[in-house]
Length: 543
Image (cartoon, rainbow, N blue to C red):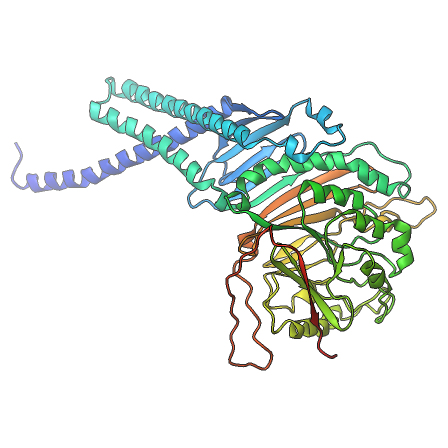
């Protein structure tokens, strides 16, 4: 028989044991929850869901690998597609193995095939997405249920009796919560407005090699267009679904950003991009030629190539577009091409070009081919200050274009700043560094030597910037490819960047010169694709 002294001690033991049992139960439920998630994901891996559109097909599965969390990935025979989302909670990754149906090769051989005819339509995408969601859901639920049944069976074997109804209800609730939380996180996390980055790598491998590197460069650029069309088609469907402008917000202006042509006539390829991407204007941030001569541009057919684009071609001079500090021959020749707009046509004025209501301005590089190549950033400060003074009484441009990074870094009042020169696509804040469209031009593809060895050259690149009706950049799509001049095009990657990550606020208006009491302001504006292009000439201040 227990003594009175024993009872408090026994009661204290019960109080100490109750929390321990609670911890054990909570730990068991968490383990069951995690097991349900892993079992559900494993089921989607063992039995992936298949979906089809007219030209493409895919099998989908889920992943809880830490590297896959918050991403949609699609490894294909053409390359890998990655969509990275800023999900508020950990969200299982989605892995989709995409394949192109065989008949698409016949479509690509047709002369007038367009990207829009290759990509899935809205109804196809909706049907495929619905089928994929249903297929993944029941597979996940079945896999999670199997884990629950195994857990109940293990408990029954250990305890030699079925769990009580209350415990069975708790286990069933755990299964329901695992399914609900998983698909709620997917539905809430993979929203278009949460997309941070869209990247495609390794698109379209090498094709037949041409022996002669320089002869027929323009022809090979034309022959490359079928591959470019497939590249655009493979990325357009997901971009249309996830890009910010797809959220019912019309695009006011679509601008093709190129730079550092360096004498390479690939305007047939550029024309295909203009047509397929419905580009409203091209912005070229300089270095059209190599040695600063008109003769070089004429021999390569560059002026005719620019004329063939059929859209405004906005240009600032690079350090290779003149032979001295006062040489303007290349600019004068460009001014005779009907669709060319020189953003700094002469020493006395600047041009503000409006495309769809988006205001674009810029200034030339003061350097020239053969200068001493020293203190280049310092050389940009004077032209940048002069440009700033000229624009002081005007609304801040939505886009400011210069050739070198040191030029645009000195500009404060701008929505987006664009430069070239580095032959590398870069992005820092609202400053977009555009890669070389031609891989540095044909001369970068040779090494001097007795054998005439071949240089790989830099990757070729271009960007497509879409501006919304708020006159701010909505998205930036970056393309990179190689070996067009050699006749064996290989497309490296496509990256879609949410415009809100680039231009996080509207550009401030500059206060008038001498008005120390004024503060930068930004009045709301509306841009529209229906707005006719306009050109405004702005006088430059005296040197």
